[in-house]
Image 1 (cartoon, rainbow, N blue to C red):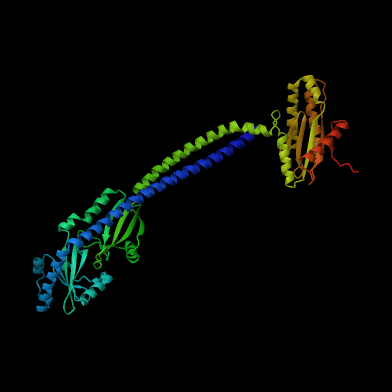
Image 2 (image 1 turned 30 degrees about the vertical axis):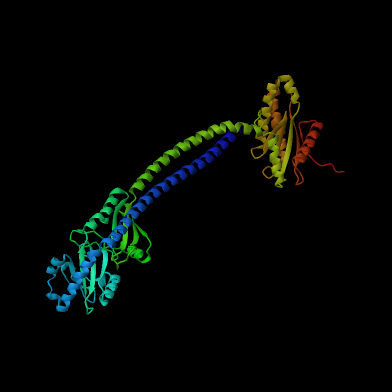
Length: 495
């Protein structure tokens, strides 16, 4: 019984320790995961801030130092308006000579916002109405107006070169004369080159795969292909790009590329001083999860190792604690000589059952007859051995479903569950028979006769431990008075 109790206590301690340890380990692992995620998000946020700052800085620089370029473009535009008034047939214009003179590209846009003549032949036929409806509407307004206008930093649609564009309507409002001035060769651009900053950021942060800055039409600034055709954002990126342009809020798109997760983050940007559509941009940052995945894998291995150590330690500690604690706890409710429950345990069990209005119980009080003769003739050591045999026989006879206890000297109590063992008389008869057999076998040679007397009390709803105990004691007294080696069931005396 003590072994079973210690095993149960050990298992409870192990389970409790394991649950607590696993919770702590999982909490630490989740905390590490969050730390890694926060670190990655911090890197991305720093990269975002830097590229936005660079874009803002270069826009402000152009606002301050680009005045002369704007005046020059306006002067050239006015010259071409005078040329148009003298010769409105653009087929007779020498665009190559004009480009050589102005050091700028010249574009003529008709009422459909299609390039019909240019010093840059590749752009002839380009329709802004088809590619960029919003920008095309702005061009309609400029063609119908009277004033010269210029945009900020933008890109050449076919080459990807960073340029500044200006627009001047013809007096008859049929055409727009557009000039394109290359900024990449200018000292200002070199000093505040955001494209160089992008490359430095990508090199600095392993987590970042690429950074692109798109204009409002979805063309990436500074990105050139081998055939000099500008890279235009494509689905599914296009849908997210349009959503960001429309809402003005950042959005993300996660894709699997070569089996690895890549997150594309889109951040809207608009310069402090708006100049047409050119100062409305979207920044795309593509970042990988390699570093985070590797760190999480390392933490996972550490977590598993830590968990194994915790499991081993918890089991070992549980065994030690159970070994130290179980015996005193066990002894508090058990008889040290026989291993049966003690009076405290049986009193607690009876009280618990009766408080639940469970009156289907019976209490047997058992006393060894003539046990004093055993101690006197054979000594207390032999008497203890006889008590152990009696206790084992009682427990074995009443079965594991019933509650046997030694409450002092040669006195025992048995709590019978009458639902499980309804025939109390049969149990009492079996006890008398088996104890007699055991005692005769043990004491025959010394000529001592020992039996048992039993008093039985059947519980009622009015009983508590004291009243039930008193009834069993009275029944036991009757058994003794009537000659011992028998049982009596308590019956109240009717007056």
